[in-house]
Length: 242
Image (cartoon, rainbow, N blue to C red; front, side, top):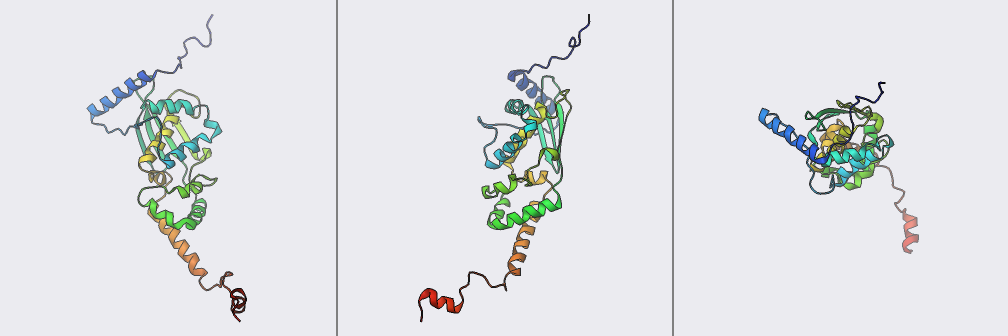
């Protein structure tokens, strides 16, 4: 009698040594062909080291829909299976090594930030204008962390992320996609401005508009008397001048 599961592919997890060996062979073949790969390399025990890299990973781990597959993604990215990762405007392209010799192809699309949402973020950033100049030097000031991570902030929500992998896994988030998403956190460690590129934001224009709005707000209030100004008669009473 034929049985349903007979002949089905065995989905047991490959060993770390197998993954590393396959990844090494893929990189070697690419060099022979003159292809340029951009692998994700992790140094040390932590996947990321900067707060903004951790913020990206923490944001992923807040998504309940992704919870079951993220540990496997960590295992894969630590094993060096993300042999190629490129971040573009609204898109992440990756190749992740698995049990087979040919790496899987991953495409992750991030919806563009709406104009309304972008303007709200700009208004909030205007209250911390002194921190924005740090962005031009390629750093994320930690004082802006809550603005980026809060609801309707810069980090994408699950419904703003479209995931696709060439592997046969039926899950919305397979381990290869999870490894790629953690790989983005590693990339942000080295170049945090990639995050703005991914969300389709020109950093210099973002800062210019924020500063312009702040100046406009200040000029609009320049002729309005402040409630903190002490009037003449009140000043006499406060300072005891007769």
